[in-house]
Length: 72
Image (cartoon, rainbow, N blue to C red; front, side, top):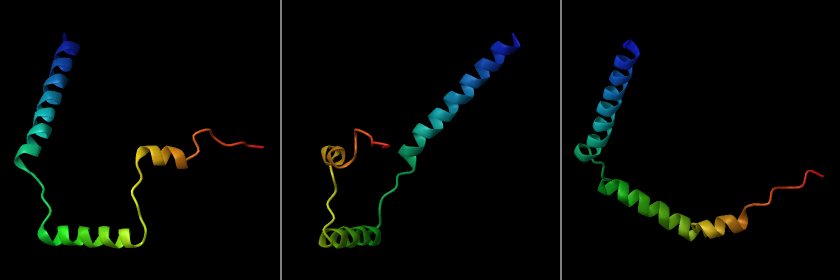
């Protein structure tokens, strides 16, 4: 009987924690300030000027070794 009570308590605590985690997003939203947005844009512009280009999943698969390597 004690194990059943313990299991029920664990489930209740887990559900309460889950509710808090889900509700937190609705009440505490984060948004970038104008200064942060300007800084991010400067960083993107500098990366683009240096030739950086974000790769898609197909590009990543093409550039990495998916067949392993030879130990010999």
